Length: 370
Image (cartoon, rainbow, N blue to C red; front, side):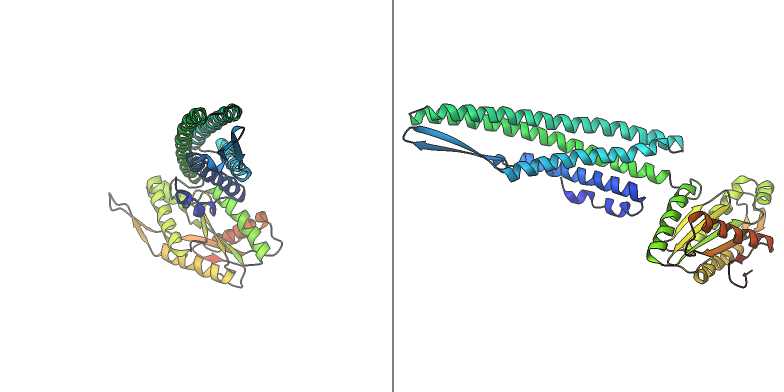
């Protein structure tokens, strides 16, 4: 199994919270270890021990020389593989309690399958240990018998028995490799399912943007990085003006289309390093790492102008909805601000924009744009 199979997971790790990234990284190491273990077992047994028969005056002596490095490598691969699978299980379990329920059920199913695969891996390891112990006993018995044989023909008989035993051991190792390959494939599938379940719990189903949970995790991370690196960080909060009136007049389906229109404009106005989340029904938040207040205000103003310039209508009836606007609050993170204070200041500026007539951007400069 090629180790490159796991390479696409690297980019995914950057999108996870630290605790999930560490657990998933450990799980990946476990998967790679299982793959390496299967290759190791399918190779020549000389990696673990060598058998040499020496003819001396008193008879034939068989020496078994064990390779401590090979044994250590085999043990480390087995431990890493098992530990990685356990860590993946630890990553799965916290997700079981998360909503929506359909995602929790999905993750619970993944966890159950993961436990079964871990049992399979342990069973393969126990079977291989038993095979190796039987093989070691056969070698030891042959060594004793060879030491008592005076004739070369009798030595050849014992050696042929050892060859047969070696072939049996290789067949058993091949079977174990196939079982480990199957377990590794199943674990890779579980990793993909886990990624999909994790992403589903972070996305808003209507817009495809992040949800409140993603925002909570992203803002904690962004504030921590801003404090540690002393880099600027800004936050934009926006809300569609008079949205209840639109819903009451034209229906929720029209309101949903207006929300998605604002989402598209926001997505086209930010960078990949920024985080966008639907904070409430018609309210959005944009986290802008490395961006000061002036640049953030310019982004908010651009979104406000583009959204306010659109004329909405109902596609089926061609009834005109007209122009819909949005208000924005912009703040820059201050040294000493915790997450709650940072968000409260942005919310206060959004409220100020609403109070001053809506369809405007309010920040902590001496003016607000409208």
